[in-house]
Length: 207
Image (cartoon, rainbow, N blue to C red; front, side):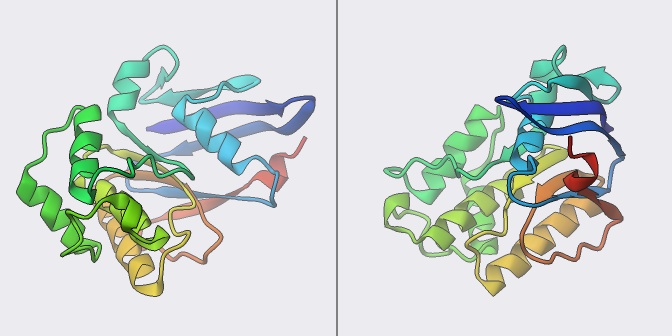
């Protein structure tokens, strides 16, 4: 359902990678790997449409994502390094506003269930600014629980999570894939997912 054809990425005068192609069917994952500066985050941003490739194209269900931007965005959940949380709002309010921006209608019960699932029961009404970095990450994880998007693209989702939260996230990802979802992610941690997938080493495509 997601494919890339002959992607090249240029940062300033430096070509980070070139000739990158892959095809990702439903229920499968790709973990993007490579040394610092190889272009992992740049590739994720290209796949999401936040950056343009120097060459090549990204296809979703056989359609170029640049020409079907609105439809593609409706089926995408992207989580970058920044968590996109509003510090003055509570975890509950952040999740409700985030869902609204994606055009989703979520019940208060669903929000509370998602927060409980990631270990934030009892902290749902606190302003995000008083939460630890790990707890803020858990709020973002609750957003995944609420997401109905088939394609998840996640940049270092395991960062700043303790062992319990990492295990919770791994379960969330396994469930998403088992339901036919697609996943592209980066991680410095060793991750073992139950669904079929593959590593994509950007070093192979270094310019």
